[in-house]
Amino acid sequence: MKLYVASRAPNPRRVLMFLVEKGINGLDLVDVDLNALEHKGDAYRAKSPLARVPALELDDGRVLTETRAICTYLEGRHPQTNLMGADATERAFIEMADRRVEWYFLLPIANCVRHTHPGLAPLEQPQFPDFGRSQGEKLRETAAWLDGELQRQPWVAGERFTIADITAFCALEFAKLMRFNAGQQGFAALQAWRDKMAERPSART
Image (cartoon, rainbow, N blue to C red; front, side):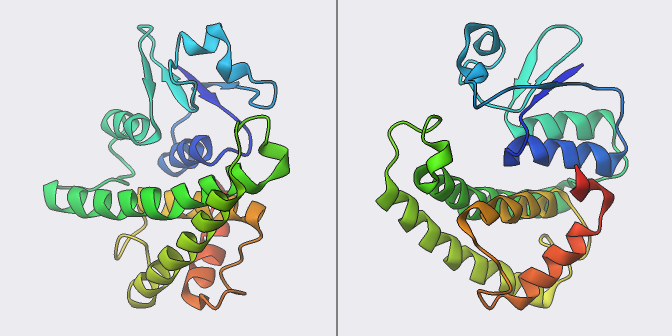
């Protein structure tokens, strides 16, 4: 199988961390050059029509896109170490946490960076700086919620490490591009969790 990724982009990093945490090896990693707009070319669009990364090309030629779908497929093929829930109830609560982080934490960060960072102007046309800044404000609201969650439980989805922690970590690391630092913003629990996450081998991908 081939996994199409892009350096520094948060969603491909989510899948790469997922692979490390589960101990999955043997995928052929193909780097897509976003700065060169390789993802917009016909060859890549034939695999990912919406021109997004990551994408997982299966051995039979079919292609899975969307981070969550790729991770669901890999979890099904490699049930251990379990990161998405051992039964229906746990799967539902882990997915709830992961979706909350993805939609209300990662997405505002991505929108802020895309619309305010000068280096991303070629990739985000047109840029809307006011929209980007407003998304940055929304990020702080969700960071306060996430900090509260981590004050009462050790991991994003509860008592154990899951895919939700991977999503939140990749989001928070991407937020460095908007100079967001959880500790400096007064979110001590979120900063402590981030520092704990940074010690995991998967965080070095």
